[in-house]
Image (cartoon, rainbow, N blue to C red; front, side, top):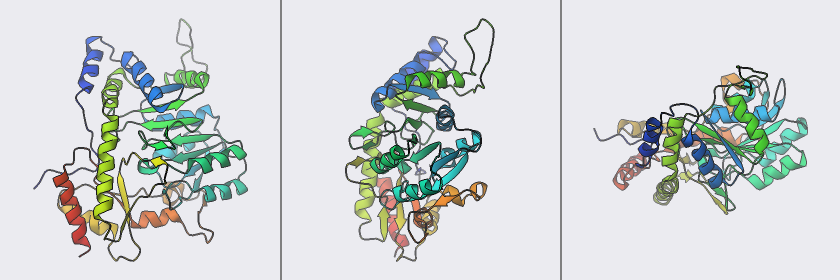
Length: 374
């Protein structure tokens, strides 16, 4: 059997070990140290925000963003439905109430039309969480305008979007807070980790206190607020520093994979995830839908690829369809009540988007997909 073709595996560039070794050599094997500080500096300069706080995961970063915004018992938070559960779960951590928003067909992200409907029923949510699905920028201008009209802060979940741009600005820099993830399969990785970015430096200092167990500046261990063990370690931050040197290369590689899929599938009933003019996706994952006119299902393609040792993934199952969230309110994009996100989920799949995939290996993927339509 041929070498496995992965969906999106870690891609080490060679610089990581230098910074990790430095942590060992200086004995900074802890959730503080030079690597943590420098990784934060590199990220905030890259994104274009005034501050950044490195954490153990992107989930932790969303949790702290919601805590910083004062989300608590019963507060409504609007959240994009088509996303990974980590976007929504922190709402529940804070005892808030998620209200899910449908996608629009132009980017597969939060629908401004559905968001307007949600505001009509719930005029005072505590926050709005928008997601850049698979690294494709959402309709930020429209969403930010709606949020501004209602004076509600936007949390920008760019966990999948690092390296992407919207009208020339980096994703993660548009909301009150931006969220990044460095999970093992992301565009860059620290094996596990995340970052909270934003311009409110005082509030970010408060967040830093929370994620280091809320210890007060006393001679003894004194705690006046609830604390969390969410700080990133100096070792994994070293991996992140090395990965930053390859970020643009990784985005370029993933973009080439997406563009090739799009070109070679032009004659098939396959539509790659669309994006708007003036935006630059990072193409973390090359996602596609099978046209409604076809009798081929996404699982037919995924099964055929799996038989040849090729990894794929279904589209994220929308949160409003998840058993845990089945009782949460949901607002659709279409006036007739039909759901865009449900349709994308039913017809979609993620194709191999691995940085290390060779042109010959992508040929294999393409040929297997084409055979499914014969």
